[in-house]
Image (cartoon, rainbow, N blue to C red; front, side, top):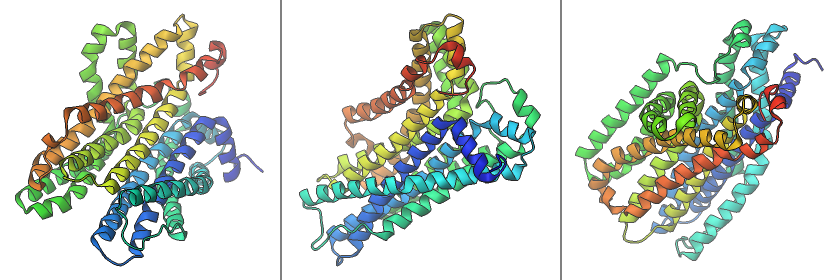
Length: 441
């Protein structure tokens, strides 16, 4: 088979960047797992007669299904874009030896499709296990409606399949269009740090539109009835999350500027390198900032509502933890991908005398910037949402104890650092001279 055939290109691309393929595969598995579990619970609840318990379980399963589908389409799209952009020079080389733009796009589409199909059975199986655990927790807490049994059939399978295919193809299409339009000579001669491209005006305009929409919805809900305010909270949260996801590069640059004085003062050379690296890689970091902001905002909003309730809703609590685990794993997976692509950079530092502990210090300082952007944006969203609407619905921000705020924010910061530092051991086992010649670990 010719290397310029779509399947040949996709196979060669995966072999050249196995870490990018593994990262995309893992993200798609996480997506299929949560979609399968959420849809299975919602479908199972819809099969029993209507009752307060049935409505609560069905609504929660439906809400988490919709939120997860949105999260999957948006975040998996960013992971796919990251995986494709990491192979920019390889795509340029293929263009230089005769591959047309349409072949690059077909290569990405083929790789995305096969990755999604490989991830589907794994995610479906794990989702079935999660659904059984969720069902068992509801049963133990007496939350199940009479006669409800768990059904995991074709509905969750098709929902997971559709989500995986749409999210992977959409993300791959956006990234492939960018890669196929880049001139081979420009990409092959580029010397800047990957991810330093400026975000476009269209992206900024979209972010401002959704931000304005979220503010407008908040104002309308704040002057309306308490019931309407409660119903509109998920929609307002969704609008804020879209605005945050699109504005990821600017959030990264803002956090870098805010953290720079402290890192310069206490971080020494490591702090200076971290600031320079984060500033140059702001576009890449947005793929990690987005899920961190999403999980922080969603978790805080849900925990505030649960803290204000007289009785803890086991359904909502389990669903919140499930969603938080999904978004956290996607964020961690993205951060691992971002670190693995820096093998050449870290190897160069080691060849000129940098010690392993110094590189770890750089990664720690960069993690502080990423956590500030993601956790900070998520906290701002939760406050902007729950300060006006939480008081209206009887779930004020003050209902959440200080320790819960600290635990949520601290967990986000620890997640960022742990995921960013996790690949370093493997990268340090590569000899510096060998690492300089390679593109990623």
